Image (cartoon, each protein chain N blue to C red):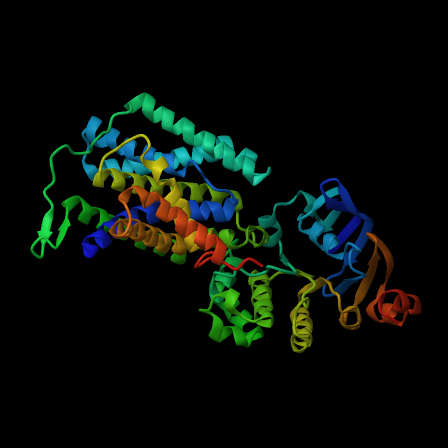
Amino acid sequence: MLKINDIYAGYGEIEIIHGISLEVKEGEIVSIVGPNGSGKSTLLKSIFSLVDIMKGNIDYLGTDLTKLGTDKMIEQGLSFVPQTDNVFPTLTVAENLELGAYVSNKNLKDRFDLIYSLFPPLVEKRKKKAGTLSGGQRQMVAFGRALVMEPKLLLLDEPTAGLAPMFIDLILDKVVEINKTGVSILMVEQNAKKALAMSDRGYVLAAGEKKYEDSGKGLLENEEVAQLFLGG
Amino acid sequence: MAVQLFLNGVILGSIIALGAIGLSLIYGILKFGHFAHGDLMTLGAYFAFLFKVQLALPFWLAFILAAMLTALVAIILNFVLYRHLRKRDSVIVMISSVGAALIIRNIILLFWGPQNKFYDKAIQMPIILGDGFLRIKENQIVILILALILVIAVHLFLTRTKLGKAMRAMADNIDLAQITGINTERVIIWTWAMSGVLTAAAGILLAFDTHLTPVMGWNLLLPLFAAVILGGIGSPYGAMFGGLVIGISQEMSTLVISAAYKPAVAFTIMILMLIIKPSGLMGKKVS
């Protein structure tokens, strides 16, 4: 459903991604792993036009995303959860979710119920300001905001960064649960082993280039990848 | 005496609060100090003078027309000036707003001249309460009621409407707002419109309490910024609260120091706040 074709991207004059191609098929979980500074997040952001794209195109269900406005992307079922600052801190949990549905508020109540059933701890916090929540709960709000529009493809930028260990597994389990409801997932993750173990396929980046691509299992069993990127 | 000063402070404070709400939202969303805010306030007051005195319309109608016209000027400023400079350094946008302030003030001088003007020349007899304990003019009662109505209206707008929530969201985190699909350009235009209406209201109420002069808004710019910083940049509620605190402390300060130092009070509060808690009383924490 998503095909990145030989993309070059970065910030202003500085090119960070040097010609990467990548694909996500319907129903898949795909992980992008690699060392710090390898361009994982930049690659993910390029899909949402959050960085400057110098060359290449991104095909999503037949449309070129590099020419589409954000509101149109969301209408077409694309959603993005940034790594940091991914909630509106002075707004309540309920308001954060409402804004997730800014583009269209059809059947809003049903969709809210869905989010609250996926993240039960948010129910009693719905009137609380998002900025007062714990890291794990804030991440739930961020996921909720991104899921309100019932996306077909969810982009996650390091969903477990900065979380306490007990929340890391919880959030990753939720990712699998969300995927089972029919949402395809493309994520960048630092916990490479955990991410690859739950992924259908994975990509290993280094220095802005694609080094390996294989099934999640295949990459985990690849000795070269293990030695170079997964810490032996 | 203290009670009287407190009352005067509440009146001045609500006027500052009205101006500061828009200033804070613009600061929060567009990340620059809008130095033309005070002169926009003056312009609103003179527009009301045009409608009420020169065209002899009823006060309420002059108020509404002046507010709408000021909102339009704010939107035009955004289109011809700030929108093009936004991608640059915020200092450049700020300096351009100083330029806009000078242009507005000189246009006012050109059309209405430097002399003081009045909405109503009749002398107002204050209502005396409790044996001279408290004196309040009829106009001041109107100011308090109008300011209260406007603050409640702003509150309902910010918490009950989609557009209002989007404004708060953008002041919180404009990048996330964009990712969420909020049409940020449209919300920015509405923010200017709302700021225009509120700042015009502040100017009209200030002139209603005293008189019109071409520098009335410019002179209030420092207390406006002090209110914004005290409340926390980007927080409309902080701005309301900050406005009241600044207004009351300025008036109450005359109990202990000369009235000539009133403007210094706002400045002192602003500096202390920047040293002790730069994010303001109700602002989001700086991470």
